[in-house]
Image (cartoon, rainbow, N blue to C red; front, top):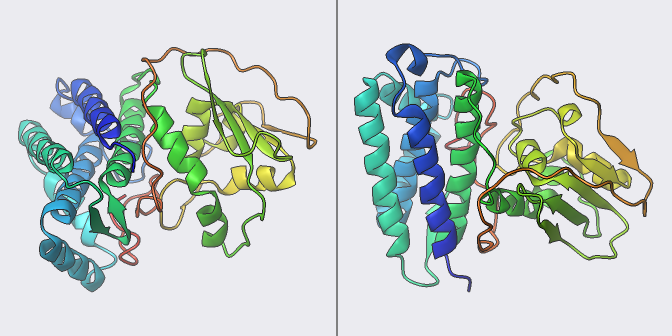
Length: 316
């Protein structure tokens, strides 16, 4: 059993970084459109507040979470959308206070969870480490949308290791979601850490098919925050190449791809070809890898406005 504290610490840090970005925004900036259709900066933060509350219920009140799930089933097309709209309509200072209160309560609950405890979610039950990993992934992805809307740059940090880990773990899910049989053999994944000083590796070293490139680009791909053509990821082998077209670290329909920005297309290399060196990028010091999540976070496509088709397609 892995220690959940490192990823809980990183979830807190990721949230605080996003908080620092939005805490001084003007009302006009809160109303700016983000890459998610029909969602403003306020909607992005409101959605994080809503899903933090759902996660808190899962950890502290299983019966209350069951009621939430029943409400989702009763209004599959509007449940999450209505939650985001309600909080997004608050004055910015009030919305910030609601988000801070919810995430602080969730942080406390996760830290106080009994070792080995598992909590209900919109899919398989999750451990504290898995739930924190899912929340970090979503906080980073929606924070990216906020930064894009503001024209701001959020330097990548070693916290992306949690997102990358989740992206690798969900390979077979991405194939199955589209009715495809997952490849029988594991892939090798080699990602250059944001500071350029380390390579995060997953899978057998001698696997004939692999994916290589910057960790940031891989995380953008699996959260569907960028088009593959704009990313410096390389697929070595046909199945690995296919995966890069399908990869996602969240549950639910993927939604439409982001439009390419005109970068050079990715390259597919023959099996066994050597990867190219990736340029270094700045980052904070690396932290421990979280416990392997059992399933991707149950969220609908993160680039589209939220919806509720099934209980597995919950908070974005």
